[in-house]
View 1 (spheres, rainbow, N blue to C red):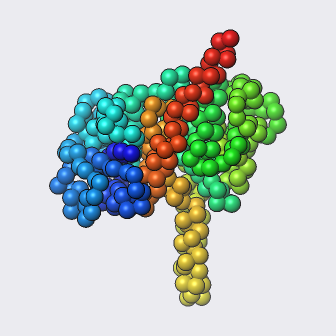
View 2: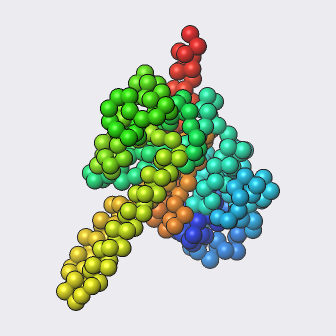
View 3: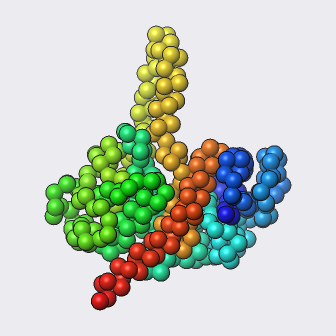
Length: 333
């Protein structure tokens, strides 16, 4: 299995990417990794190059670049060359912690969509109280969506949840303003009807206040609502830990308490960190394309590589394509 990684993408690149790649090689037997980026910056951190090769380039797409323009103009950028390796069949999947919009553009232009999928969805796995997590899509690949696209999101999320996350008959919920049938706007009402007839375990509408409690294994929404929900969850978690830190630093007594609880607080923070579940998959593309969090450390990159390998091994892309093909054939009869 060959995985190609944008070594220059992310806040901590290339160090965190290289460290993650080396962790992956040590832990995953049947994997070869290509790091795309500036060789002179990568090599100082590459202490074990077993099954790791470097595709050298000095051009980089930054977070400030306009995604589509950058992908079209910066032909030698690490992210673009990474996607091209998949397009040319030299790699099975790719991974970047860089510019999200550029990765989506490169995925569409270079890798291409699965036949029958109207639009890809960006999908992280978010934490739940029980530690199992849930697949959330879309969180920003498309701010405008049609009912059929939400139907396809539900199917793709269900397949991923089963094949990669090991959930038997995963529960799929539609994010809405209430749990009753018929709730929501025209988009959610029409999507609800389509999801009811889909070959998935659709459990109906779910509310945002319940998703972190594990009400569903897959939660479907449009990219506009999904991105707002994701950023709200991130902001709430940051605020909570900020308040905890402020409280524990308030006096000598609370500082002593913080010292006692230090390990427990680290475990809690890790449980709430969705980077522990891997990256966000761009579901609907012709090969696995994973977006790691921009602030990923080596461990988070390793988790994203592991996730990518599971998608390749379980032929998630092929299963999605076959399921969509069967549905389209049935509709045409």
